[in-house]
Image (cartoon, rainbow, N blue to C red):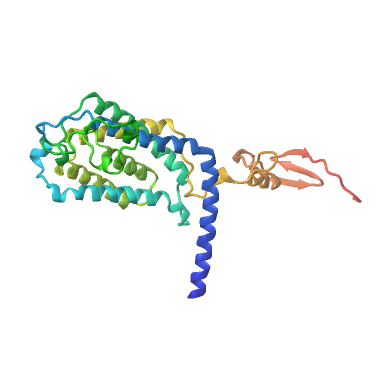
Length: 312
């Protein structure tokens, strides 16, 4: 038993090291996209913090979702955050599964390049939207009488740049249309729906996002319009950007020639091996060949082969 565990642990370690090497090579080529996407996450947080200075609390607007869904209350507002955290962490862990599991379909660096592109496009539209019109926040800390509903004039630029993380993110007001939670959730679920392999997980993920949409409205963190706009905006943005981006290499069928070592003539070892066996790797060149007296018969045609024959 201990021998089996040791052997499997050794295989896992070798698999992990090989994956690390591959991902580091990919990161060296794509680090600008990753860094740009992460920097924009800060810019998005800074914009959400900035709009809070313009927020003016007022009466909660009439909302169909507020009428149909019972209010959870402040003591149960954590439920929607719990569901969002579950979606977020589940997706992050899935993107790193190639480091552990033998069966894999994605490259971690490439999938995050794609996800960050979706997020940046959606968040850019969101910033334009919530700065265009500031609605009175329906959340409890954004209502009349709350000390957090208005932010005092900042004493310095540093106070704004630090965005009071994480309190400033959790207790923001004014950044309503459209829901940031829905942006992350829909991008993550759509990405898994395309690149994931478990059909029941895909169905469960979509069901979870629907439940989260209802919980966001029931906890009064957003108006219904914030959630509805997120549903069609995020899906449309992801659909069109996905068409523009190059398709990711599929690893599930063992197609990893992208990272095979190259020889001096910029051909992979697999291509050279095929040429040594009498074909170039092209399906059109896989023709029967018969050698007769130093010549190769190829579909009835004789092709002369120059060879230095010593002593023959």
